[in-house]
Length: 240
Image (spheres, rainbow, N blue to C red):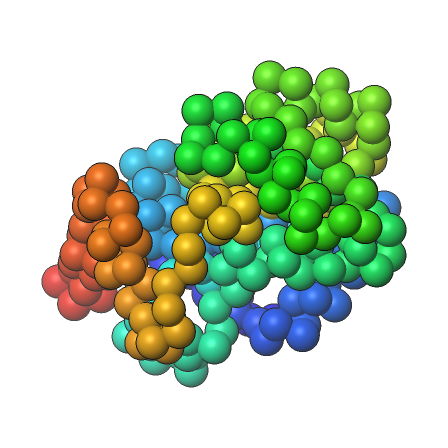
């Protein structure tokens, strides 16, 4: 596993099979592990949010979630490709698969005002994974639910930086949890509320265009990822 820094923020580059082995190791560890899925918006937020930057740099694993991260690393001379991305959706799928096989318990923490209600998320996931042992809760009840139900895995979809800060502040209060990960809108994809981009979009690394077509209200966020982030990277490398 390689570790790089982009504008002062840690990212890890590793093959998917190595990531899966790490997940198994984390679940068998005596320690708790915070995983982040870093995209360009994370990097931008971290430039003015020192707390968020510190959290990202202290995670057990920070995977590449975003074409812009791959581009920035390539610009810096590192040999990475789109195949090195491990998105929040993919990590969640991997954790679900592991939990089904090894009978681990997963607690999902979702936003009550998000695109996917807790009830809809539970029903849709139960249909797809009837053997998975999981519960769905909201932020205000998550700690109590974790302390009483004692899950092994905590998957949080509150959006960044809130979800990373919440995990950092509360993970120690949920001692049964071995892996905690913030996945943002990935839960909407898993529930089927939002459809994944067609393969032709992902093969060219332009899923952001699909999201813009489907959710025009994300234009400001997408601008940060595809315009502001490259500007900051180029400025840091060539202008300073």
